[in-house]
Image 1: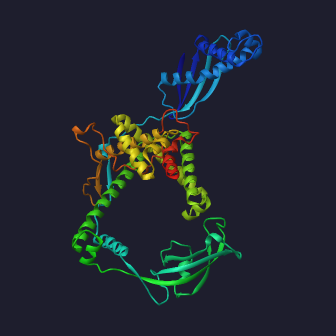
Image 2 (image 1 turned 120 degrees about the horizontal axis):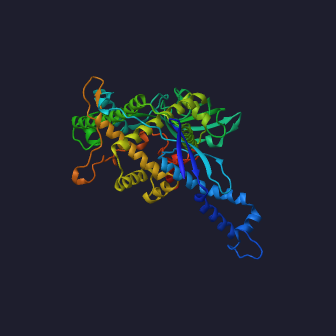
Image 3 (image 1 turned 135 degrees about the horizontal axis):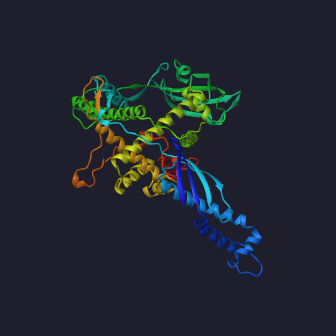
Length: 492
């Protein structure tokens, strides 16, 4: 067999494969043996029908066609290996030459991984916001903590913002009552805006026993998009009374004896959170910088597969939310065209990021051992609320496990890059990022330990799975890892 490669574009090649008939003959003989077992001919036992009889019954051309179709996957795979083609899509195969006893010539056009030239990472500089916690942020957190320990006391006055009320609700559309929109004794914080549009304005100023009716547009359910008439009856008014911010409060709300100790602990916790946010900011800016600096063409088939995977995940999420695409776009304030354009741009960036991080993985020989993989499965199973073996079974379906491994490797590659770039805050001060630790030499391989801090969903890696050889852009394999987590949770 002879294979030659022709580059059609940075992301597409054409293989021309020439196969002498002698190399094709074993496939022809195997096809005769298979058909001899399948075809029933009077006077011959199954499996003993001679080739000449099969030629008479089926036709030599039909048998040769079947032999070629069965041999093509093997021949194509051998050509890919011989020419070291890193394929990303199904091939478009065309038989250009064949005659009985003569050579077979076929071509295969396929999308391939583009070459990526990596920059000198040590020359890159990232600017992030300082990890400073202001006094106002500390007091804001303490205010939230006070709110948790507040008590509700009945009041005999009109409803005000911030009050808690008990409501009886009912709704109708064009005079027809909506059964699912009825509630009795529902507790609601006035001004929170987490019930239905118009409720706050309607009941503010009402007193215990007052009834208010207002119109609102329904966002979900059978009457989504239609205007409903809602009746709310106030059954009780309570105001929130906050505890004093003093040492007694510190003792009640924490393990500390004084307010100063509690305040210092809050500052430390907020600084830890801010450092994590700073790391996330640096990760995002590094990816933006890499996509900006490194030219990476995106194969159309890979982009199409990524867009399909994202649409699949969105549909899955909207189904869980009990809404549809139109209502979701309305909450975003976007048209379908604007949303699709934004998704396409995001998907393109995600794929470019994948290619760049995969190039870093190859260049730095970043690996993943079995222990790290098991830690990830255990962590994600816990997050999904299922048993690890059940979660692993979901991953094993399709390309879920391969996708998980790719996510972890790319995150390790990104952390490695962050160790080698210069990071400063907006005031020009050097920033030491809160990166996962590296184990010491006696702990095993010198790899980044990310089991406690990795969340692959923070990476814009696009499709959950890798852009890997023989990836099927027409399947949902790229989203199996994300779906495994969701489906595992569903099956509890």
